[in-house]
Image: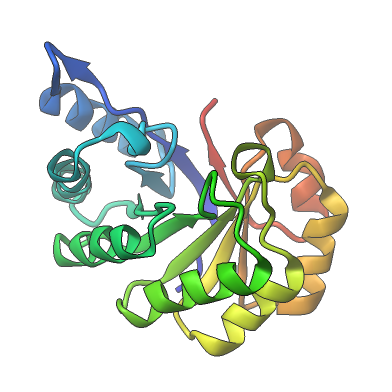
Length: 207
C-alpha cells in the first residue's frame, strides 16, 4: 500500500477524564469534509504515551468507524516496549485500521540492530502495512537509512517512513536507497516543501 497526500495527526479530546468520543468523531468528519487523504489517530499528537490501552484502541476503532473507508486510518501503535507495540498493532488490525505508524522506541535509545529487531518482530506479528517514524529530537535516536532499507527488504509490510529529522538530504538518501515504491512522508510541517522537492510524497501534519 502507498501512503500519499495529506494526513492529519489528530488530538485525542477529553472531557471529565474520559475520551470525548463525540468530539473526536466530529474531528474525523471535519477532516473528511476538508478533503484530506487520511488521519493519524493515537500518534504522539494524540497523546499515545499517556492513553490507557483500552482508550488507545477505542480511539482507533472510532476513527475507523467514522471514516467509513472514505479516508485512510494510519493508527499510531508504537511503543518503547516491543511486546506493547505488537499488542497495540494487532488490536489496531482487528478493528480495521489501514496501517500502523510505529515510532522509534523513545528513551531506550537502542542500537540500530536493536531498532531492526524491534520493528521486524512487530512487522512479523501483523499483516498491516507499516510506516516507520523517525524523530530523533524526541527519541534521541534516528532510524538510519541502512536500517530502513534492511527492514524494507526483510519485511514486505514495511512500506514507508514518516521523516521528522529536519534533514532534506536524508529524504533524498531514503528515496535513492528505497525506490519509488516506498512511501516517504514529511513529519516536519515547516520543511514539507523541501522534503517534497527531494522525494517525499506525503505529509503527516498538525497545522
